[in-house]
Length: 411
Image (cartoon, rainbow, N blue to C red; front, side, top):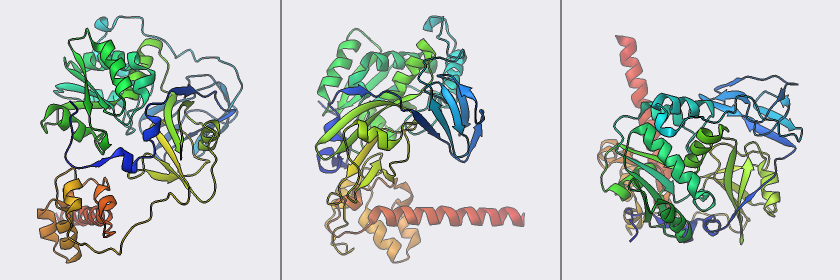
């Protein structure tokens, strides 16, 4: 029996990536040129003209080491590190497998290994930092709802979980699959059949079920903050880092347009244009490319590239782009209330905000909204509910910060 969260929306109504969940994973050969995009908070460790080897550190971005997936020459180091691959398979001397059994390793050694290999979770957070700051975790949960790595590398996921459980000191692990990937769930269940520590659970494949706190609540039935949730791909990356020493340099990405759905394992730094071309998907005709899901994702350009957090790309034809319905009028139908995963009353909150009743909006939980967008999607009146509430929350936080700063200045 599948667990189910409150509210949300079934995938078949909103998720163009659904068809890719059961498809096989195809490996894509590295491009001739890889572009490793860098955020503002970066430290570049190479110079133009340098020759780099596969798995070599080229930058530190937001506290996470970034490695080149292939050997080649550095041709750019400004907003990105561009590698012109030379076709060789030379690997950096720093890529060293662990020569100790897991039971003989310390927690600190595992954390350091993951830090050196630059392993990041699906939200971009450093796994080393998360493990280091984890305090009193009771269960490890691996999310396989939106992560199609489950079908391609089930053994790596399970073994990666064992490594994380050992580092966390927990003796309970749960792999959570959506009820639309039964084959993957069976593969994982077969591997875990003899394990007393790891089990496989299924949940209704609804959006936003994969959210960490909702996933933990659906599985454990409690809202405690001591569940450690990671994605399936992260577990596989942990296993690769620990066993082979290879840094996190590849991602499995679901790409979709219309009836075309492909799962591709590509090198980080691969341009979206090349990724889509490899999948046999044409870009054009006024459509949009959306990364990260249709409700919580964002538009990207063909020139952008695969990063450590890239999970999906959906190419929308111009006639598929969502157009807001209605005339921005609440008709008091209550659909947003039924759909809200946080069990809020979005219609009342929006009404209070529009009437300038700040205290009433706050008392109804306006700051508890996480902007998943489900309420806006189901609203037949076309009210941009999520935008109104999250905008209000941002303004409130800004004003509260200004007031706090004024108080500090006075003192």
